[in-house]
Image (tube, rainbow, N blue to C red):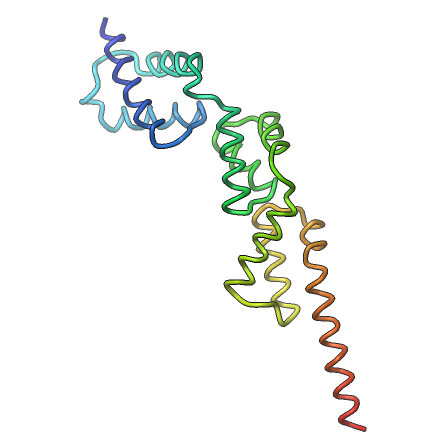
Length: 181
């Protein structure tokens, strides 16, 4: 009887957590355990790990929690709002308890990372201005790689900026040569 009461209390807490946002099963298990330990006096006596497992199984059966759905939602949010690359998204999913194959499936559903690189690049340039020196491009390169984009893809997207700087440099050199003559 007391475990049923505990399960009901755990279920209510889990619903409150899920009302705020989607959670992976591991993430929800961790939060439930932490909240119950923190406020043990507010929960009925019983086997807490067993109650959490029962609630998670019930919620999975009812599709209240679905790691595949969670993985796709998080991956989309990271790609569209934060402009993360595949590596960073994969790492974030792993930290939340999503296995590699499920992360790969979620990444397949996303738009090409090239669009995310361009969006991050536009955002960076809007905040800091057009790159004027090679050091600026190196800083942008490191920024984009930290976002989880493949270095080769970043170099490809930055190529027009490198060409612009190179052309500017040749123009300056040519102008200096005319002045000396």
